[in-house]
Image 1 (tube, rainbow, N blue to C red):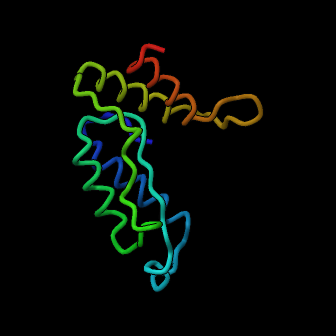
Image 2: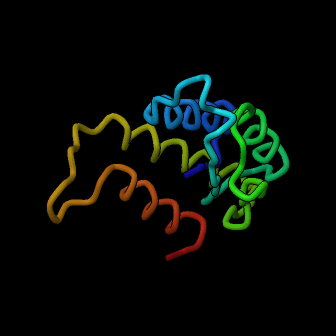
Length: 121
């Protein structure tokens, strides 16, 4: 999930690297592993995020040689909405919130907030 931030490029790189680290792929197996990548939610520049995704996943083979799927990215260059989104993300990250059971996760809270901010839902 991507959110429009001043440094969305760095944010996406960190998220991808964290995700790869969680898989714990062996360096020698990276060329054998196949990944299917879908980047979704909100951004300010689709082209830049596509380049970041390609570069950060360099060394992996994409499933069926498909490019990363950016079709669910919604682009907005509204700086006011970007500021509000950044504030929501920062405040949510600072919460001591475990989620679980019937409670939403932090990511669920952020997603609901971003839908309200960008889509008016």
